[in-house]
Length: 266
Length: 267
Figure 1 (cartoon, rainbow over the protein chains, first blue to last red):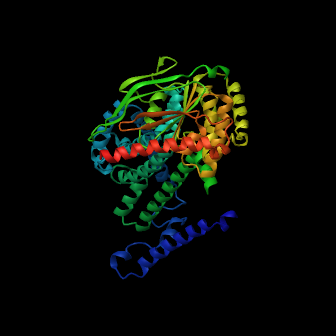
Figure 2 (cartoon, each protein chain N blue to C red):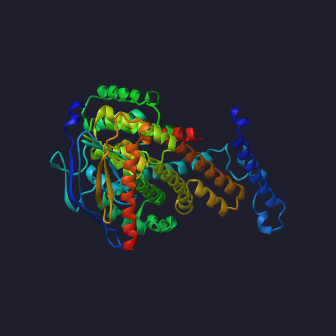
Figure 3 (cartoon, helix red, strand yellow):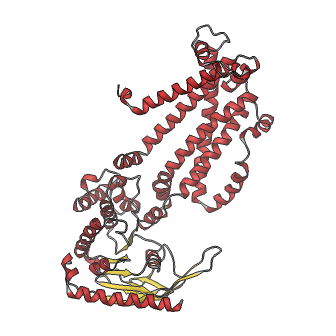
């Protein structure tokens, strides 16, 4: 009930309605042949929630969930791989000069390569499933490693000095200063990484997979099943939205000090 | 803290420090800088901003080492930071991700100098004394500026250091809070008599707090004058209207102006 009195909630509703109106209008009223090929929101919704979908994909069809599961599985595996390797690397880079010099040359050269440019090479060297995961992993890995590194670098040097004069060991500094101090940036990195994982996932699946939402979109394109394309897109959007909401939630729990401090300053 | 009276003599002899920055000419910040800080006294180091006060403080704290000269505490050379000297920083260095009490017991926990229960009870006593006991489970971001400085004092004092180094600790506080903190701090010092080096750029604050005042000047900087401030204890705001206070103030003002004129002539 509280939600109904929340201004933000109503603004969000208005924004979404506006988007649908724009979509509907551009299909129905813009006199362009190419725009007419696009399905209007009503058509997509009736297909999406149709027990007997015209093109075979709706919330009542098992295959739909099969695609979702495949995509989610790939996104999560690459995300967790990226986090479990990228966060420690970023911390090591901030902590140790040698690691930083060594790794920054490598990251500096590899990071600007667009994720899709990796796809052909990934298909050549890795078995099917691993190729898509590898591409997603790479992008997410760069995002986490670099953001974690920036996080460590941006910790106020006085926090280290204070720890040194209170007699902290290197281990104390790592666990009590570096990790909590870098946490806000780490979580920014995780959000970017999650977004990047979904983004490259869809692209990777279009080229190199048998299942998954990216594959579904591409296949529907080939078979001219236009409403299904939009269903695939919308599902990817929702999954991305919920996964970054989940990361924000975990981040908020881990960084209670930030939320409480902000609460006071209003 | 009874033995604190007899230890913590800092001797600085002929210290020089050159700052080298990439692609810029090196700057001789300090040269031939000598002074002593006597135990159980509050020594205030004063000078214009940028004259190298913080550099001196960082060297005594052990974060920097001098290029020339020697620095000793009780005749032992200073090598790196250590819990015998605790520094309170310009901007608060309480870790924002730890609650007030976690911040306070960080030192004892890191050193393993006392049991957890002992550290907590000592911290509680200090926080009660500083009027912060109700805030012990809050985060620093939820405290006011003055409360943060008091929490930092508790964080330092729990370790029973030999020497306290305060680098413009009340900078950034509003005038009211600042004056309250100065009075509070002078009371605390009179109680503990911990050897203290207090750095400030504010003349009134310097005279109000100091037993002994060291004035920095020149370029490169050194100590140009040491003044014994013989104002009565306990210090209250009344001393600011006393004749002796005004005499000291005038003497220092003259010194500072001389220095500035010399600088202008040199240009």
